[in-house]
Length: 613
Image 1: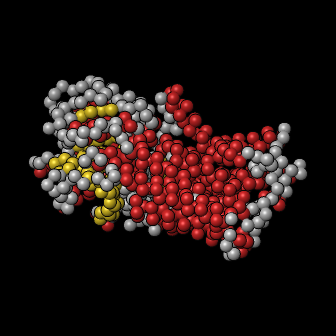
Image 2 (image 1 turned 120 degrees about the horizontal axis):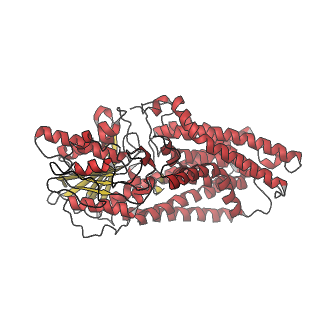
Image 3 (image 1 turned 180 degrees about the horizontal axis):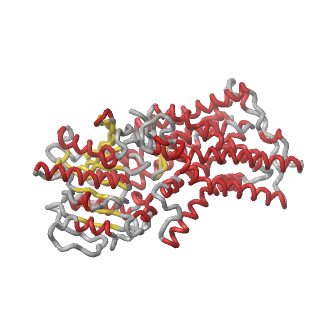
């Protein structure tokens, strides 16, 4: 009876994922009014560029539509900016959203300066659209580019590059208009002077990276970068000495149009702010002289995010019943053992001892994160220098890996210390930890973890193939991956696994108490696992709130801190999985092995990766 219930529960979850993915796909395609397809574009030096094309069915050779090329920023893929693609395409504007070089499904670049030299691949897209004639439904006189963060830098560099080419040939630039989001560092005279395109600028008023700006803050009203931006379109007219936010400068017809927005939002959340998105929509409708008759604030992308979030959550709920079904088979049944007695609830001084262990663990996690990021630069020189390599080629994940490895070892040490402390007081014994396992069963556990991993991603690949969506919420997502990621998985997993196993030991060995409320226990376990990383965000943004400058204010450190918005939720739910798998096997191993494989693949497929061509 239980097996039948689990099977029904599993298939119910799969049905929810299928229905959610269907509705997400329908919203993405504007209920069939937009064709969404993936393409692979061969580019220079044997590089390849992956992209999604959003083609409104109203766009035809006889009725060509404008085109906007969307360039995601650092650590982002085309799916992470699908909201903009959805909103533009439902308004009749064609969109090509790319995976920047070394991100998503695109190859690495031979250039260390891919944004400057190649626009992350956008330059090749512009040339392809303009020269090939294949996309005959595109109005080549109305091609725009937009990007966020480093993608915004790529958009600006594209406007500058194609402006120079246009001047040398005595023609108009191939790029009619660009919208730069979240980046002002390269708004310099030598970059702006050749631009022959209309331009919009959006910079978050609470941008954490604003310490790098010339005035050290994000207020664009008197920022030299914004002043140069506005004045770049004024030719011989008097220069502005201050910028009016949201004010239109220049003229669309001669491509001197300029506008600056300064929305009240943080940098990583800027692409998902409805006001920021409305400003982009309004900009492109203005410069293209395009009246969609849809209000810029009439946005449906949030519904797609809701449905992919439902799929995201349900995909993780699948893991446990899937494991239980396999554990009922004759081959894997030996993995199910009796669950040892839990510990008595801690009293008096023992409570303080637990809190001391948690605080020490959290403090180490907090103070070791940035040093591990620095150490990763010294150990993995090629990846840190954006050079192609097979040796740990993921620049940002290398820092997280070192942090996880160190904190996993320290967690093991704290567990050993805590175990002996409790053992001496006759509170715990070795049999209560769920450590005992034969070599045969350990191999079976690894095999079962691989099967669950394959089932999990097989369903995702099927969903993506049929519906062209994945599991995600904003910039946190589970996406399909290229085959070489499997090689990297087994390169990175051994170092991450120490952390996952340490967590399972702590949750199931030292923190499993009698008569414990399950929900409260899971929340507490998540808090104990992430307190150090949460402390980093608290320090970073408390200092930012009171001083206007983030605490970690070097050019790279703030980016490592921003990574935590995606890492913390994954680590927070880790104890829940470790405990759940322990309760169905009586051993601590199936949870960390299974979850490590899945979580690390999520990390690997959502970051920059400098694999050789």
